[in-house]
Length: 43
Image (cartoon, rainbow, N blue to C red; front, side):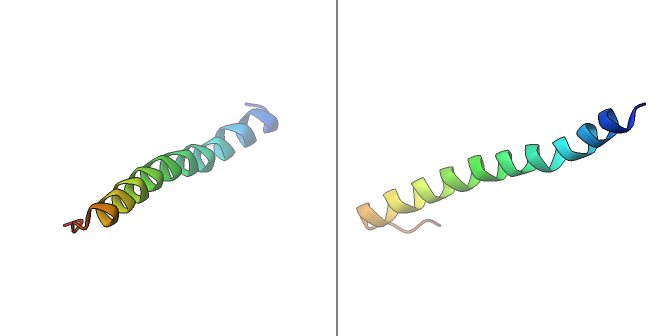
């Protein structure tokens, strides 16, 4: 396996994790803001 291919393979995992974290976080904060607007608790 070439050095470039191995580097891309190793570096793509942090990028995928970052995208998933952004998606989960944005959903959480959207729900949190909606609950605050309606005066409800999250839990």
